[in-house]
Structure formats: C-alpha cells, structure tokens
Amino acid sequence: MISEGVYRNLCTEREGSDLCRAQDIRLNLFFMVGSITANVSALPAGTILDRYGSRVCALIGCVVLAAGSLLMAISFSGRVDGYIAANSMLALGGTFIFVPSFRIANAFPKSTGTIVALVTGAFDASAAVYLLYRLAYVRDPKAFAPKRVFLAYLAIPVCILIALLTIMPAHDYDTTQQLQVKIEEAQDMTRDVHDSDDDIQSNSELWQIRTNRARQRRHQLHNIDQVLGDKRERKQRQEWEEERHEASRVWGVLHGLPAHEQVKTPWFVLILLMTVLQMLRMNYFIATVRSQYECMLHSQRQAERINGFFDVALPAGGVIFTPVIGLLLDHLSVPVTLALIVLLTTATGMLNSIPLTWTGYLTIILFVLLRPYYYSAMSDYATKVFGFTTFGRVYGTIICFSGLVNFAQYGLDYLTHATFHGNPIPINASLATAGLIVGVALVTFVHVGEKRWSEEKRAECDDERQRLVPGEEAASV
View (cartoon, rainbow, N blue to C red):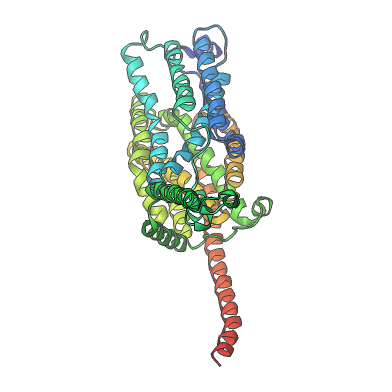
C-alpha cells in the first residue's frame, strides 16, 4: 500500500518520499478497523450460526467478501477512497466464512481434535498469503497490481458459494450428542413394532415388514458406528474425555448457570481483562513491528530484516506449534496453562522494550508462539469453565468487547508519534506491566477458586455417602 501511494496525499512536501507520520497513522487505522471488525463480528456470526446454520452464515460471508474485494479493487484504481470500508467488508466476510468451518469437525467424530487443529492451522497459515503476495509484487508490480489481485480474488467467494450449494449439506452435520441419541433409537427393538401393524392380516407379511424394519435399524446403527466408532471406541473416548476433564481441575465450575450469571463472576471478568490487554497488545505489535524497530534500532535496513523475518515466522509459528498446543491444553491444568501464558506475555513484553537486534528476533519468536497458544487457551478456558451451552455467548462477548476496546490502538499510535516522538518503548512497557498485573490476579484467583471448588465437591460427595450408608446398613440387616 505504501508502494502504491495509498494515503500519500496526507504527507507534506517537506516530509519527502518516505513514510510520513500521518500516512503511517492512517495505515495503522486501516489495519485496526479491519481487526476490530473481525473480532466484533464473531458475536453476530455465532448467533446466526446457532440460529440458522452454517449454510446461511457462509452465504452471507460470500456476499460480503465479494463486495469487499470489488470495493478494494475500485479503491486501488483511484476512483474512490474506500480502503477502510473494503477492509472491513473483507474482515466481516472472512469471519462469517471462518466461524462455520469448525462445524466440519462434526462430520469426523473420531478425529474431531485433528480436524479442529487443521482448521486452526489453516487460519494461522493464511498469514503466509501476504508474504507470498509481497514477493510476487516486488518481482512484477504491474502484473501483480493490487487492483488485479482483488479482482482475481473474487473467484474465492464464488468457489465457496458453489461448494455450499453443490457439495456441502443443506443442514449441519449431527453432533456427537445427537448421534448418541440416534444410537439409542437404533438399539431400541420396540421401534420394529408399529401401531399400524394391527391392520395387517397376514402373519408372514407382518414378519417380513418387521424384519425389514430391524434390518434398516441395524444398518443405521452400522453407519453410525462407522462414523462415531463402535461401542469399545466410544467407551475409550469417554474415558479419555473424563481424564482430560480431571486434568483441567476446573471442568464444570460454572456449568449450568445462565450466561447472564456467568458474566458477573470473576472467572469471566478477569479472563475478559486479560484478553482485552493481550489482543490490544498483539494487534498493536502486528501493525507497528517495522516502525517500532526502525525507531529503536535507528536503522531502516535492520527494521526491514526483522519485519521480513516476522512475515515468515507468523504463519509458520502457528502451523508448527498447533500440535504442541493441543498436547499442552490436554495435559496441563488450567491454572498452569494460564501461568505459562503470563510468563510468555511478560517475557515478550520485556524483550520488546529492549532496543537490540537479537531481542527483536527473540520477541518475534515468542510472539508467534504465544499468539495461537493464547487464542486456543482462551477458548479452552471458556469451554471448561462456562460449558458448551453458553459457550457461544460468553466467548463471543469476550471477542466482541475486546475488539471494541482495540479502538484504543489508534490512541496508542497517537501517543507513540506525538508524545513519545515515535519511541514505542513506553507503550510496550506499560502494556507488559498491565498484562502482568492482570495475569497474576487471574492465575491467583483460578488457583484459589479451583482449590475451593474441589473442596466443595469433596464435601458434597462425603454428604452423599453419609446419606447412602445408613440405607446400605439397613438393607444388609
């Protein structure tokens, strides 16, 4: 966008041909609005997904994504200044297409974790598109002009639309719980007998009809076993889930409470504050990584090298670290997981405040590992603490509110350029300190809350046992 002269009209002649302050702030605003739109739209996308299904949600995404691509192409042609609006449409359309994609995991119940990991890995790998495009653009700016690329990109929503209408089912795949209900129905032999059987006079005909019904019932059970696994596999999966829940230490702590009660608890407030700070800090870093190190290192060449390394590491880190994230979330308790996040965020913030080349590279390495880990851990926390029933509303509220707070990024840009004369260290140090304070509070509360909840469960079990013991003694007498 800088090479194409986007927002160059905001610069004065005295500032020369380099990136000026006003242009830099407007480009950061361009990125910030798109990021906020992607986050805020998670709540309406999830609501539409729950109410109308994946197809309707993805169809809306296709229309908005195509409109955003077309407006972006028109903007690069110089006809209108629709960059921010077009970027918002791309973000909105992307969210409406991405959110339903997780439901494809229901088509493979035996490999749900793998499918979710693949979807998450694809999301992280999508950052590589920017790197590949930049390499192509540098090689031939005319052939890969943004206008042409966005016009060609219209093929993406068209292909998704065709797949939705031809390949994908009209209704969402059954969940594991729904398949379990169908198994119970298929195992019920009384379903072979209908009230209408009384109208059949011939015993041989009645026997044949009921035999066909039983055959269809067994065939349905066989098909479900092919997808969900047989009885032995289902039992093993259930035992593994129980072990995973036990390892988390907080599974079920707020399950059963309505969403409006859950959001009033410190379990919600603290994870919300933590997410707000981390998303603000992550988006600020992504938008300003080059300008930050250009100021801290006083070298445009070094800043470009660090930025180039970041372009490669961001998608690669997410893809490589995704399997490790799954293992960590499955085997570490929630308090330990949160403590590890606080450690990584604090280390990243401290290194990002040291104006040295090696700390810049180390900051990026930790950042690209922390980013997918935090997003995965946050959704995992919401599932284990709040439950599946209210997950969409609770998780959507966290992402939506965090997205709105990200408008503060524009203020951080202004402070960096106007108050601190381009020096990002005060902002980086302040965000790291705030994250450490909130993070310690969250870890401490979860640790104490987990101990207290475990004691309450143990006390309930003891009371239940005491109520049952007299009954058992009486029965034995």
